[in-house]
Image (cartoon, rainbow, N blue to C red):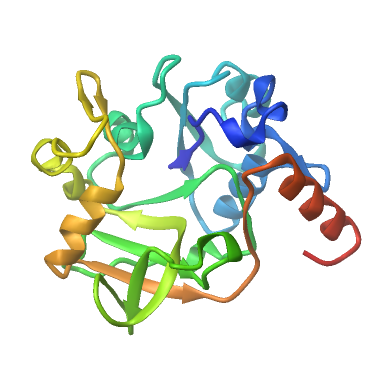
Length: 232
């Protein structure tokens, strides 16, 4: 699943007319790079959730045939359902098996073929060293386990494998969060991940390659220039 429903407020004015995942870096849309690399890793079916300017995705990407993929779209309406609600809304399209999830506004050279999930785990998270803008990180990584206390503090790369069972008790887990809506379900994924890791059911790995979480026009322009110059 590629998460592509966000409004991209910090990317304005670019995101006022173009959804963030359809913005280009070095001549290629961010989401097109994901599709290319997912296909190379052996993925054959992709679900893309959409909201803001959602009609642009099918127009730009079609049914995925050019990458050897089958793309299906999970439209959330004009108001995005947040990360947790968006995935929950798409579960009927995703099926019962574990699935890859990646944010559509990333640029990375991570090899999706590396992804695995432990037999008893509900999630497996890819972690990166803390960028300057997120020095405190998100979770601890202790070997191949995600922990709340201890380990090496790192930042969640927004690349993961999830089991649908992670969402089984979403009402109880997410209901206490501020801003949660139950109809339609609109909630963040983070509370579900924290509940799972407290039960010891979240694995993880460190990634040392190239990873850019693109939030602003300046960051987009800087990466574009670096890649065109052969860096990045």
